Amino acid sequence: MAQLTILEFPDPRLRTRAVPVQVFDAALERLIADMLETMYAAPGIGLAATQVNVHQRLIVVDVSEGRNEPQVYINPVILARDGTELSEEGCLSVPQVFEPVERAERVTVRAQDAHGEFFERELSGLLAVCVQHEMDHLEGKLFVDYLSSLKREHIRRRLEKERRERAGAPRSRAGRDARVASGGKVI
Ligand code: NI
Image (cartoon, rainbow, N blue to C red; front, side, top):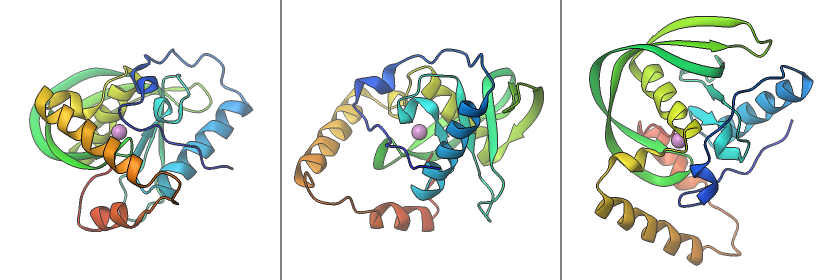
């Protein structure tokens, strides 16, 4: 297994629309394993293939306390949505930014597993938020797109400034860990 590099906003590759997964083979299983390792190490509760520059319709999530209940959704489609929920979101591709986003409270998702088998699942709470956030990534959409353009531009400038400041220095994970510990959802 290997940790993959996570693209960060405003990298234009994050705007790529992913294509359906058509081949369910050992290479796909390796990609899933690498994405899970990357997500757990980050640490985050979800990761879309788009974020590691693989433009196929594949997401991994784990919202469990024990971080031991990975879920994989390949070619996911939302069949039904119900209710609305406003919750604070973060994103591994938009480090250190947490903003409220409105999502459906419950969704019914159809997807395929690593072997290509179809399944349907009703999701609610954090898992529903997380899967909707990850599915946006597959469309080239980021959670900051739900904010005002003024706010998004402010975030972009702040991230670019931080990136310049830490250029050449090893990347600190401490800030992210603290956010996760305080309940921020890094998706
Ligand atoms: Ni994200």
